[in-house]
Length: 348
Image 1: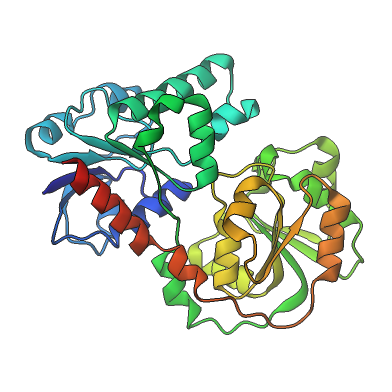
Image 2: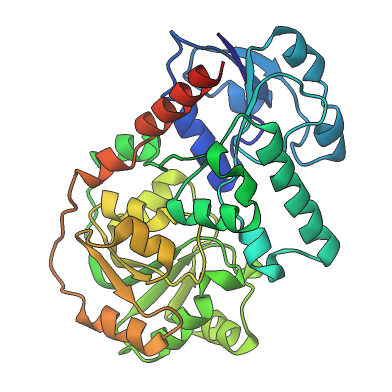
């Protein structure tokens, strides 16, 4: 079965990580893989596939309307898979796509204008209409997709995120002392990530605590007062954009990871923290309760409540912690790939 995959998303944030995890676990005895993407990215994959080199951006208008690979896909493919909701108009074979979340619809500030938001809504709806199956990463995301597009509920399938292969390779090699005064945030710096809450909570902590933020300071998008706190405090360090090994080291050396998000489709950093036996303090938003409620090493604070977050940090026990390994059998890309494979086979 010839499966063509739009792999131009490799290296592009969470979608790229999701795609890489799927590709590394897909059954190549059932599927002959044809991967479309940049040579630099494809050549790094240790997967059995036929490359179709394409340097174009998946977000360009040409890619949406008539990408260069469309003719070959239509002629040779049994199916086409994309890890995002941009489905080219000129693809006419059975298609499978992903809508990881509808944050762009739920949070108006993530769109630059009403027109921008309308375009995103149109593209998501088109992916749902065009695709045989659409994969999403949590029951929460599924419920939000159905809120806007209830007609397509029967096409939606929940698949888990997982721990990337590079982290499995690193885990056994790290020998790093834990600093129980070190707090870590990993993620982008957009307003819905709740960094203003983290800033307010951090101000209430004793002076022995230090905060490390994995992200580019110039991309910080929070209120001016919170920006002042985070930018000028000598106990706050911006680490910039980190490679996998650097992320693993920062997580492993921290007392805990903090994710004060107001909205997520999944939320990978807590899972990655637990993988490296680091506890996580996270907001009690619905998707986090779905994924992490009752999980050893996870502590919830009231969403939007800085005092609640401060108390959780102060109450954290300064002892070594070991996560339940069963968690990583529940959330892993082998499981994700199997679900995607089965759904594609059932539809063809």
